[in-house]
Length: 104
Image (cartoon, rainbow, N blue to C red; front, side):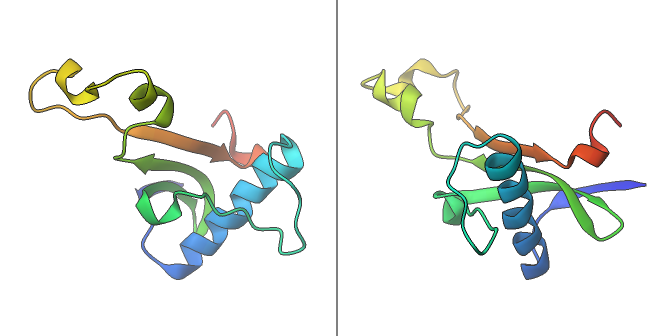
């Protein structure tokens, strides 16, 4: 019923922008509305998107970014020195799931 993968197709990225708009503008107004009804993350070019598909529809998304989250990097002179060897931080951003597919 559900399939998980990393977004790779232009249609998937378009659906991500529309899902983010639906969740982060219409449902939980954290960003301003726009006539295109699309929300593209400011770090889009640095993100990898893990998506959940129901048939060919993107019904869930999480943006992953390998750059340290700003609030962590700002609080440390050398964040990498505080991590265990061979480890790095991944910023998980913009978790969005369509209301119809939550709690499944």
